[in-house]
Every structure is written in structure tokens, then in C-alpha cells.
Amino acid sequence: MKFNLPRGVWGRWASSASPEGAPHGRGPATNIHPHFDIDDRFVQRICVFCGSSPGGRPAYAQAAREMGTALAERGMGLVYGGGRVGLMGIVADAVMQAGGEVIGVIPDALLRREVGHGSITDLRVVDSMHERKALMADLADGFVAMPGGYGTFEEFCEVLTWSQLGIHPKPCGLLNVDGYYAPLLAMFDHALAEGFVRPQHRELVLEETSPARLIERMRAFTPPATEKWITPGER
Image (cartoon, rainbow, N blue to C red; front, top):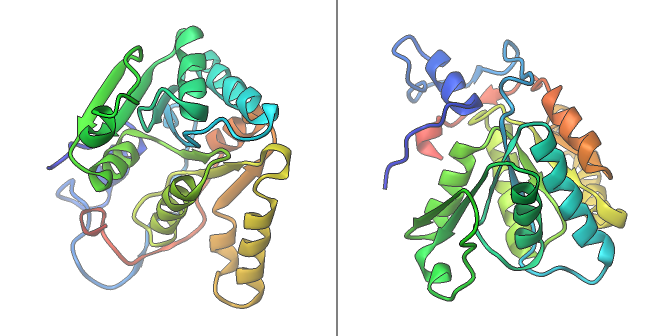
């Protein structure tokens, strides 16, 4: 399945990547981020990765409600995995209740298990988990991981890796609720100290405990200089 690029950051970056208006073809690594500035006009939709469970602390659900409200109050849309359960459902409901836009992307197999959210702005059904992640990435202008499990970790680390490789210049943030992501942040710092992550790539991870502060940091984000190793079409 082929997806069209959205009106957000990805589409504008791709159109400036080559004279023909398409992403660069295969070739040597080039610096693509130094000239690219993100501002309020570009960060229009945020993709939130989070758990399909509410977790074991009330703070997690409260943070999801605050995230949804903060997005809607700023006129920003939500892109997420399309579920109606756990933190996924809570953040989507909060955006809708505040009058915002919610786009859910869910594989048909999960929809048939009746976990799809039927009361959001736009629920898009795809054939596979891979298509789900690709479409969510294309629709969003930035990415936030809230507390979640293996799927949340994988989704966030994948878009973070895409940023490291120069596939996109979008901000990637962790909402560190009650220290939930402290061990992961420590692992990132350990990888940096051991020479497996470069300093400029460690800076790609934004971290805050407040949804509002994280959103504002994402809106002010300027990508560091990053070498481009893979084109968007090769991800």
C-alpha cells in the first residue's frame, strides 16, 4: 500500500530535499537538517505512542488526559493507534472532548477484535502493523511516547532511529510520568558513554514531566545536524 505524504513537516521537507520535489535518491551521506527550522506552523499534529492498558498508577491516566487537552487547546491534532482502551482511549477521548482532531490508525485484525475507537474524527484501517506505523509517521509532525509497554518502546525507538538516520527532522519526546522513563533515559546515557550513541543523536530525545512543557519544546525544536543515510522511500 502506498501512502501520500501529509501537509505537515514531512511533505515540506521532502519537497525541498531535491530539485524534482522528491526525496534524494541513493548516494553518499549528506547533511540535511542544519537549514531546517520547525515552528508553530509546522507542528500541527502529534503522534502519541502509549499503552493499551491504563497502567498501575492514576498519574498515567491523568497525564493522558492532560496531553489530550493540551493538544486540543493549542489547535494541534492527535495521531495515534486507533484504540479505545487504556491510555490510548483516554488521550483520544480528551482531545475529542476539548474539540480537537483525532486520527486513529489501526490494523484490520485489531479492529475485528472490537478495540477500535468508533467516536473519533477519522479512523483509518490498514492491513498490517507495518502499514500502521508508516501511516502514523507520515500523518504526524512530531512524536511523543507516554507510558506503555513493548509496542510503545518499539514505536518510539523506530522513529528516533529514523531521525538519527536523517529520514525525517521531526521532534521526538518522552513524557516521563512519575519517573517511568528514567531507566530508559539512563540506558540512552549509558549508550552515549560507551560510544554507541553520538552526542548529537542523544540530543534528539526531548524529555519532560509535563505535557504542556513537552509540547512547547517540540514546537521550538530545531534538529541538530544529522547525516542522511537512508531516503524516506527506503525506510
